[in-house]
Length: 395
Image 1 (cartoon, rainbow, N blue to C red):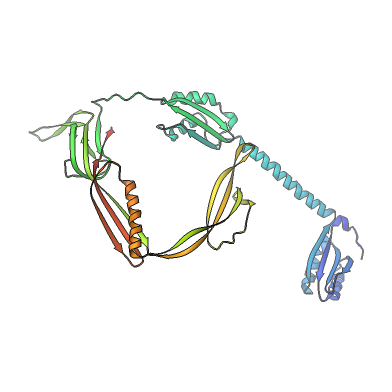
Image 2 (cartoon, helix red, strand yellow):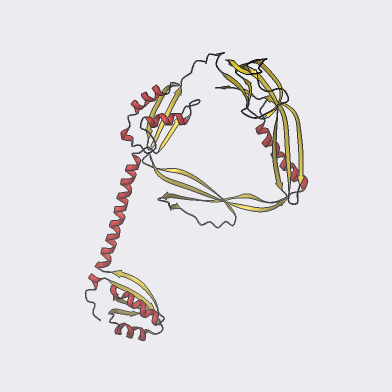
C-alpha cells in the first residue's frame, strides 16, 4: 500500500499479536487504513507501518479482533516538531527557574541575631523594621552602615552593632553596653509580690505596709507588702495613703510541688537493629523531587527528617532539602510486674519533680502514693518546701 506523505504526517511502526490476522487486515482495508512493510515475526506477531493519524482507528480494530497492539517506533516531521516544542518548554522552564533563583537570591530571607543577652530579639527586629529591613527586603536597597548608626541611637544599651549579608541571610552581631547600676530610690513606689502560690510561714517587713500575715494562703502575683504608707483615722476608721515608698522585706511560704506518672504493665519496646536507609529530596512548589531514593522494605521502622536550605554558589535559596533517615526497628512485647512498673513510674516522677524544685530550699515534707489498676500503675509525688516567694515589682 502507498505511503503518501508519511514523513510529513508522521508514521508509526506497530506490533500486533493476534490469532485472527486475516480479519484484522480486512477491517483495516475496509476502514481505509494504509499499512506497509508488513513483517510476520512468529505465528501470532506481526509488525507494520501506519500513518500517525490512523493509530486510533487501528486501536479500535484491535479491540474488535481481541488483538494486542504496541507502538515500536515513531518517525516523521510531526513527531520531530512535537519533541522540539517539548524541549523549548523544558529550556524555557530552566531559564525561568534560573531567573527566579537569581531574583530570590537578592532578597533577605533570614535574619540571624547574635550577641544579645539582655536585649530581646524582638526589640532588635523592630528597630531593623523601622529602618526598612525585614524578611523580603531587597539587599541592594539597604544601606547597612546607615542602619547600624540609627539602631545605635535607638537602643542605648548597645555599644556596637555589625550588619553583614551572607547569601540570603542578614547577620546581626551586637555587643551590649555595660550599663551603670541603677540607683536605689527609697521613694520610688515598689510593692513586694508573691512569685508562687503558698502558705505564709515567715514575714519580715522593713518598709511598707504588710497586706498578709503568717498562715495566709497567697497566690502568684498577689501583693504581700505594699509600697503605700497608710494612715487610719481612729475616729472615722477611714484609711488614706499618705506616702508611697520602695517597700523592703522578705516573705517565706510553704510551697508544694506535685507530679503524677504512670507505667503500663504491657507495652511494645522498640529497638533499632542498626540497619537504615537514607533518602534525599527537595520540596519545590509543594512537590517532592527525589535526589536519592531507596525502597523501604522494613516491616517496622522509625523515620527522622532533617531539613536544610539549598545553597547555590554559596547562596542559600528558599528551597528546602530534606534528608530522610529510616531506621529498622525490632518490636518486642514487654510485660512488667507490678513492682517493676511502680519502680519505673517512681523514677520518672522523681526526675520530673527534681526539675521543678529550686536549689537550696528547705524540704519540709514529702508524700508518696501509688494506685494499681488493671493494665497500669500510677504514682503521685508531693513535696512541700519552705522558700522565699517575694520579689520587687515596680509600679
